[in-house]
Amino acid sequence: QIESTSGARLNVEKIERGSERVVEVIGSLASITDAVKQVAEIVCDTMHKISTHLRLAVSSNMVPRLIGKQGSFVKHLIASSAAEITIDRGDENLQTESSRTVSVVG
Image (tube, rainbow, N blue to C red; front, top):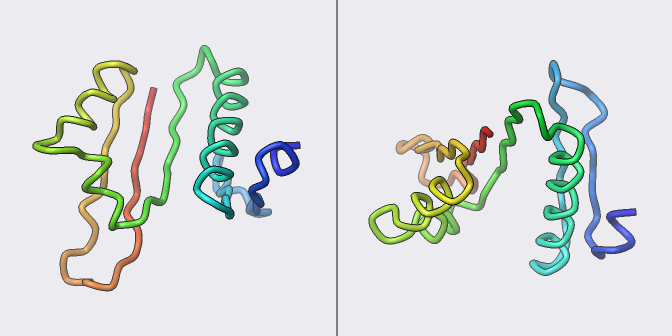
């Protein structure tokens, strides 16, 4: 249903890693945004009383925008949501690394 309403394609990893599964979202920026919002709503509705850990692979070139000037945007997200948000630093020796992991716990 998410695919038909958002226009994005979702690939759900068939192998569970403990209690987590990888969901890959493919499409235009607008369709990906819509699909991720819908997935987040499902997770929130299902796990609203349980602490949830969400890990996102974010393109490395988007990380500065997510952090904001002197960390202002990520600090705003943390303050307004009360979630713990961490962004991995990646391997500084690998200049070709294309994504970084953003972890959200709340």
